[in-house]
Image 1 (tube, rainbow, N blue to C red):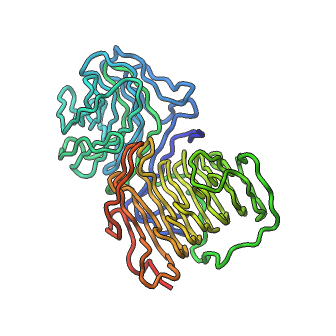
Image 2: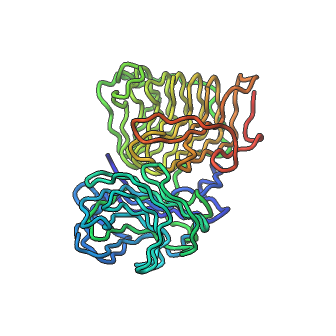
Image 3: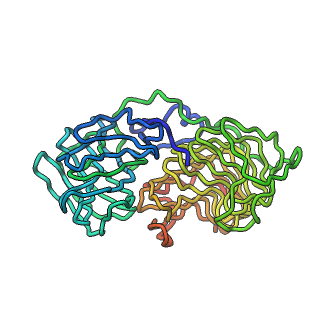
Length: 449
């Protein structure tokens, strides 16, 4: 798995979108503002307070001193207010039943914070920590064991504090200890590992960090229409093994085919595997296409066409920002785009035909991220659902300039809401339609033709 190499801070002030994004796809929600996977082998951007910290060869941030009373690493901005922080956390050893490995939000000092702790007693507890005073907001018996990865998430919205473990809420309450502060990784008389830290602001008002200087993803022109038809291949090429892509791969509108059996088996290899930051453009993917395209990090797909989707057209896995600009897909019996990683998928200037879903945020992956999709300037025909999201994890889907063709009875579902569940279970549908919170669109955003 390719991971992001450096912490990314993309702060978005309330009511203001990133400039390049605003020029292409309207996105009023604030999404990912910070992420770090430690895959570069260091912890730049983090500040230590106690403990023995190292980044190991697997890209895991480890605290190994079980004798440390309180070991902490902090990142982010002291002005962050309403946000959610999520990380994978693995307890390695506990010195006692009260020892802990956890994740912190709104840290105003090294001893003042909200903390979601995995305890040596096997419980998970959401805490308000003020020096030596620890107030339990709520807890749940989870049978926490060492050597096991847990996905912890703390949401702080106004005075409401919520804690989640593996996508399930274990505690929620009101507390006024801190209104703003940094994120933190914490152990006390325990050792543990941390990975895949993500902060997003979609749960409430945006953090007050100054605008980022990094360049936002390139997306399509706001006036470019979706393609009106399917392109004619300039040639065909049989593929016997996955094609790895780093940098940019331009297929010149050749058809690539020959991977897998054209069915829904999840064991099929992808046709293309994109490394972090890669771009795939001007490619026609024919049948059989295996598992289509895998994005192992941030990626861009420009004018990519799927003539007959096999398992999935593309799976977004290890990054935080994925862009689909132009192209189209048809004959996806299940879904076109599968979103397994964190962050946001932008789909624009695209057409989908004869498919189950255009987009699905994974509802039972091993890691339960909060995920977002922005769908703009697309044409939909003979497709059951445009987007499926998990509202219990805070997913959002925003739609604009969607044209649905040949649906006089308006049977196409715009936004279907699911309850996400741990891996091994099946998510359940809990509703659909615009709600101003998770499914974001108005009647003027949808045109029937």
